[in-house]
Image 1 (cartoon, rainbow, N blue to C red):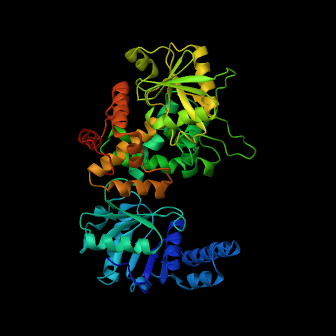
Image 2: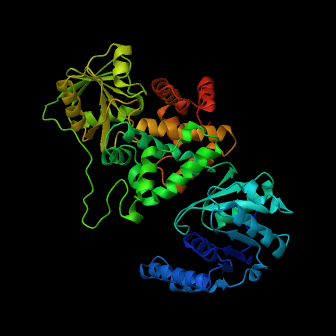
Image 3: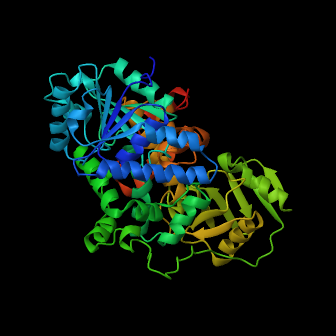
Length: 505
């Protein structure tokens, strides 16, 4: 299916940050664009703002003066909605209110030609519900951009119950022609990104509530071990807790109270207190002038470690052994079930069990569990958790060994799955359920999470790298530890394990 011709007039309704950004994207792609807002002068002001932003790109040498002038020339403020009658594509980016959007779509259906596509930039409302009541609901589709639209690559192409596949393919091709990375998704609560991303926030919030560590330490682990650009607390401070909490509540309600999406009492308290994050000056962190950001907690050891014993394979953590060898640690290999021994300490990659439970189950003394890392060859930090009977000397030896590999070490309370493992396992679990329910393909879900929220790897590809049996085992152990359906392994993951396949096979 071919993209819309560049001569097609694109109308954007709503001249806020999102609407203006979408208008800029369409104009830069070569379309004549009409920008409308009910606030007098808002569209013209938005176009002036676009001109200034493009001017900054010209000053930095990232855009030619000619391209700037041509883009601005394609932008036209439309004071009256009637001026949009000749549009071939209308994208509404107004307030997230179902009835207000429905009213606008009814008005547009009567105003625009029968061939005009009516698209909504909604991030949370059902496309099926928005189209309901129109004479031709098949004209309505979701085209969900991410803020800031000129910079963020992802566009979710959202099909409602009446949306024909040909229309979705046309807008997919159009978004590609605009330089974006589109994905197809069904109109289900949260679409792809706002659904699959919930565990990223939820697991850190739960770890904080259960006393695993402080915000700075948990954020540092997600960055330095997990490879995420920001931890959950600094990211929700940036998004705004009112916004993030509202999305979580919306998804939770839409899924009839499924506890996978349960909102956090900690975040609710921040919202109630008006501590909304950066925009209010205080959230999990203070943004007052001169405020110092707290530093992550770290363990250190002065012990001298020259050798270690590796029993069997450490699986995804094998690059850690090469780091130790490169640092001059003598590595002795022997058969076993994936353990690393140094002095009195026994180190193992977390499998979702409590350290104390695993020590008891497997008959291991002085057990120290290691958290997941995106890349053990490059990670700068790693979390550990110790069983109750692990001696201070054994923990010190474990820390000294990890320090020899160049790792900073942060201790967590003995909670199942530590920080990165449980977060990634839950992201993969939600992604797998989305595939199972036909919300999107595995490839589109991974692309959406990379391009829409800058994840270092798609959660399903990450699960494949870890090994699906290990992911399912971690989830099952989390479920057993908590006794909650929240952590139940997705049927798709369990089926793939039974079939010996991966998510992307």
